Amino acid sequence: MKAAAGANGRSDVGNGAMENRTRHRLRLLGAFGLFAPDGTRLPITSRKGIALLALIALARSGERSRAWLQAQLWGGRDPDQARASLRRELSNLRIAINGTDGPPLLSADSVKVRLDLERIDVDVRELHTDVTNVRAPALADPGELLEGLDLPGEEGFEDWLREQRQQVRTLIEHVHVQAWERIALSDAGVPAQGEQTPATAAPATGFAPSSRRPSVGVIGFNTRSSDPDDIALAAAFTDEIGDALSRFSTLFVVLAGPRVERPLDHGPVCRELGVRYLLEGSVRHEGDTIRIQVRLTDGVVREQIWARHFDTSLRALFDVQAEIAATVAQQIDSSVEIAERTRAAAQPVTTADAYHLYWRANALFRRWERVPMAEAIALAGQVLVLEPNNAWASALAAFCHSVTFAFGWTDDPAATHAAALGHYEHCLRYGDDDPFVLGYAAGTLVGIGGDIDIADQLIDRALVIHPASGASLFWGGWVDIARANPARAITRFEQALRMNPRSAVRPQALTGIGLGLLAQGEVARARAALREAVQYLPYAPVTLAALIVAFTLHGEEQEAAPFATRLSGLGGTRSIDATIRDPKMRALLDTTLARYAKPQAVNASLHKTPRISGESSR
Image 1 (cartoon, rainbow, N blue to C red):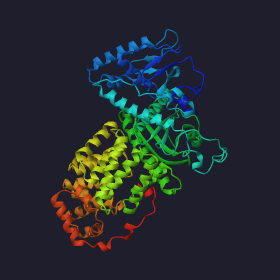
Image 2: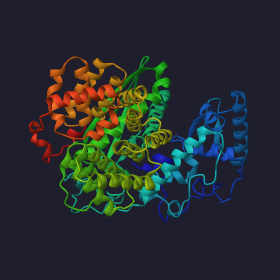
Image 3: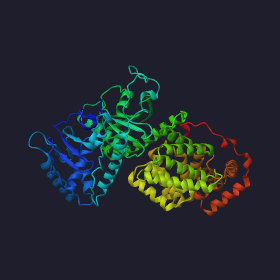
Image 4: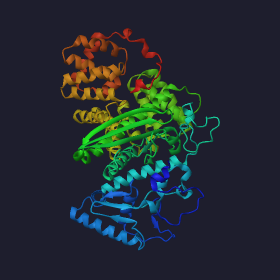
């Protein structure tokens, strides 16, 4: 099974391989150019024509709908004008690139426009292939995607181009790394039947552990039907989910092509694609019902880590297809994150492996206790020694310092505040276009009592880059709590949880919902959300403070007593100051704390280092 053939129809492209003189070549990296098989540059000068060709060429199937193309390139025009403009550009492109012999390279009907990828090599698509099949020219100073091309006023195209440029930068970074240690089968310690053992296997080519994102290969969804419409539906859904996953800055996504083996042997496929996780699924059409089944497997240990199915009617499918894909992508991102933390937490640190150090730190800080938080900060610091420009590690360090400051877990608040701010500035220097980094940066400002207007701008930027990011919505909810905007905070938290009910930050989201509901006077609902949250965050000052207020307002002061006793010994008043600002609520909290203050009764385990587990961080 070759990723190259699945991605762009070629199987003979290798470093030093003979050029295939029967194919056209499209250069989208750097200076644009479309070249005939004999090397002649074809005349395409219209900016909209160049953009149109790129939009079609980078579609996973080489097809785009006319309606989508119109929206991207002429979104502000009258529909009739947009249709006429599309017809004109397509006509010019066909004249420029379709020869007189053989089938056309570019074709269109009343619904779709198609580029024959079996007869054209696209430099960007080569970056999706196995590294051994990537041409050297595709990697040597490739330049930016559609360099210099700008279409002012066409927001749809500009958003698409921004996402694609980020993905190309990730692809190039990923392909440049030379070793693939972490995803070798030896990671599991058990070779597959018939495979070489790690000691005798040939060196793997692929990707190094420390500089890469968790990687997912998307296998073409299958269908039992031989009906061309059902096959097309399965392919379309594969594309939709692949596109949705590609928008996550936290994942590296490889389109693996159609599934050709049953049952799928996950280990060899993962090694060939250079990924650890495989996403596969099926589409079943029975009457008017469509069932979509999706599952995610850790291909190294051959363990299924997530699965879900969706049922919808054929009539409603096209209305909910994008929503289903976004939900699947969000939950896959979360499942991969949990799996990475779980594995890192279970493995002791024996070498200076930045990837392992980062994910272990990520697992530790989610204990929300003083000693593990300090260890997480130390591990993030070790990552930055190994990789000084690692924006993820500096964002994590910034946030952990802010929590330490806000919770009162420091003997030198000024130094901790300064460290949080220093890491905040560092992470934005190297990751200001990464929603993952922007979210942690905004959270850091909330924790240290920084400029909340700037935090709000960071969230706005993150949501422009990736509107369907549950993580950005979560961080935005906390910014809204700090800005005293409870209605939007609740909306954002609830939307994030709908997208991913098993989110690792569900307790924190419930805490935010509880605070928002308290601010709106909905005490009973707030109390219910906070009672659930405190089960997972028994020593989080903000959760405890909000629950104490909810119980007291509900006339259940005795219920509040044990939580007040616990909170009175924790400190962390800065975090409470930033989130409970209503004077009446704060007075009520202070009165209850004074009545039940018994610092000596605080659980001694607060100062012990707990054993980490990935499960506990869910």
